[in-house]
Amino acid sequence: MKKFIMTASLVGSLLFASQADAATYTVKSGDVLWKVAYENNTTTAKIMEWNGLSSTMIYPGQVLKVSETAPTTSKYTVQPGDTLYIISQKFNTTTTALIAANPQLANPNVLYIGQIINVSSSQTAPTQQVTGQHILNTGKKYIGAGYLYGASTSRTDVFDCSSFIKRVYEENGITVPRIAADQANAGIIVPFSQARPGDIVSYDNNYDGRIDHTALYVDVNTILHASTSLGVAYSNTTHYWKARMVKVTRILK
View 1 (tube, rainbow, N blue to C red):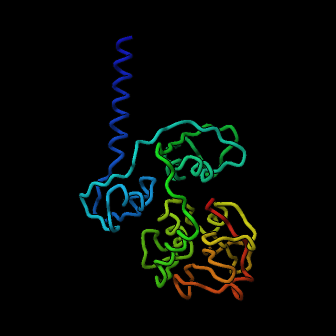
View 2 (tube, rainbow, N blue to C red; view 1 turned 135 degrees about the vertical axis):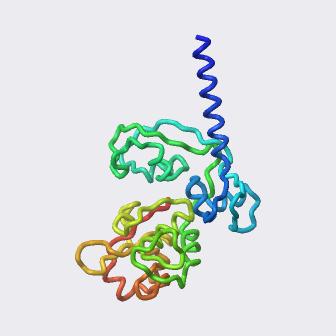
């Protein structure tokens, strides 16, 4: 019995040390603040607040606080209608974190009712809810960037349509798929008449039944996207784009 108690105590100490270490991050060469935030399941705004930063500039060797308190891990039973994205919103985490915590998932896009998965949630109050305006403000930073099909999501000088969407959402702490067709299925479908700023609008440019372009809804006549002709720019939706629109998808609550 004594041996068991000592072992349990040691395990508890190791877990505590691991969680304490996870609360800070040492900046490496090539790191940018949004990437550090994304990899630590938080937002750039929170890291700036916790570290008293006045800008997003960081430097190698800098130690950043990336968590206000240690996360708690628990089990969750999948309910009807659940997806990893919906579960991540319930627990104030990200789909990336859920996938990392559940290596047993053969296909993270397929869950079944009653399935048990691991979840980690912050013990602090949830961060300020991201709004569509936050999404658009982030997207506007990249107006004028060029277009490159298959552009790496780490690049901000060039984008294709879906790398732009992915980058903008993930800078706000929300993980979305890389491919346009998958982005169109990542949230809930809403009628165009009920679209809100920051929603994802999907298009079929070739009229072949396949989604090949995604954009951010701005208003009834405007989208913000990375197009082949203009790069990141606003476009009017009353002519060319109106005829090719497939659906509107909402990622935000």
